[in-house]
Length: 281
View (cartoon, rainbow, N blue to C red):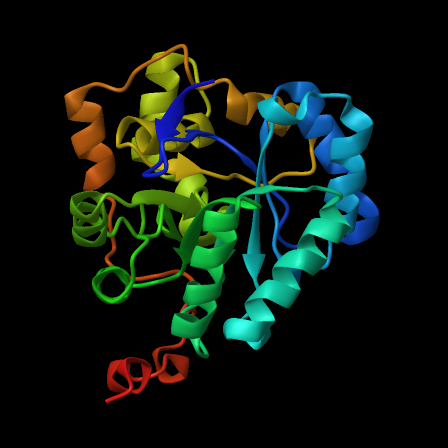
């Protein structure tokens, strides 16, 4: 497994296992199978309702804690100073962990300034190894950095070949923030995995279109958290380190960008608090 280095100095696997929309009753099995397949990074959230199942799978795996990288997220309904600490402690209890490797604000809603101040304390105190954000436009990340002492380590956003967000990613890179892709395979939307550019590249390398997409993300320094409940797909998604895309192939995939999200309205700009309100102006 390859890793990226966060602004804390911690190493994060470039591929993780996401559990969004996996029902709690299926999550424990799926995570155990993912860990058996070789995953060491698992991404969940307070709002997914499956943290406890993730925790049971981690405990049953027998894998040393130092080999695991666990991410969870603060629910938008608890995004304020007091709610952040309560939610963090509740997530730790459900996961059965003393320490969470990466704790994210799930969306730029509510008093995320207040939540961030609490999260800075959690990081300084030790139980939050790194802190970051999710679904934040790059200008919001820059503003958060300008007004706080600790910069987000990660921004987890929708990005894939159909919605590449190269300007956002370059801005995040300049800020020292790692881009992480949720829905890296577009969750079968937009005909991504049947696109002839991807199928053609896959045929040349003896790889699936999904493997081509994940390789494309990794070569651009982007962390990806594909989700699947099928063991064969878990293994396939991990098997992306034995080949490399050429510059021409990378350009071919770059040309697929449609410049628009597949999940319209997420995050909802109308729910983002005005910056002057956050600044207390």
